[in-house]
Length: 164
Ligand SMILES: Cc1cc2nc3c(=O)[nH]c(=O)nc-3n(C[C@H](O)[C@H](O)[C@H](O)COP(=O)(O)O)c2cc1C
Image 1: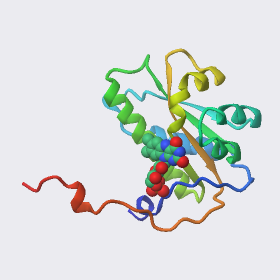
Image 2: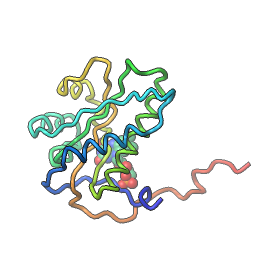
Image 3: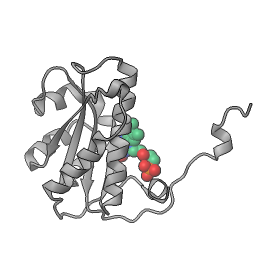
């Protein structure tokens, strides 16, 4: 509960690298998310290359985050593995949240970038993914260069519709 509560979106990173083994671990934790019929529709591209990051960064107004993160993970829905679009997208959301919690647990920082989806076609082309793979998000990862306090959330009674 402490981990869930203290996780914050981190958008500023130190230049220090993040080891490939750690990145693999973060992806593995993502894949332990539940999925409908256990179809595991997620696919990933690890983007370390600076030129490639710069290219992807042009596709979002949050490009500065991608340029400054040592590693980004692009997360895709494999439509060839999909059986129910809503449920598959929900599963990918669970996968990304697992990744963010793993990143936080490891003392790293990360942020879920979704605004880039308006140019998903261009990102898919740049990353040369199979035609069935649809961009769902880019997760920027690095060593945090900002300290974040408590986040803000609506009071719990505002989001509970009924007690019946
Ligand atoms: C679907 C989705 C899309 C998001 N897209 C972006 C984005 O494009 N750029 C960004 O800086 N943060 C993005 N975020 C992060 C949210 O802004 C952030 O989670 C929210 O403000 C709550 O802050 P916290 O994560 O620190 O608790 C996104 C989060 C989600 C779940």
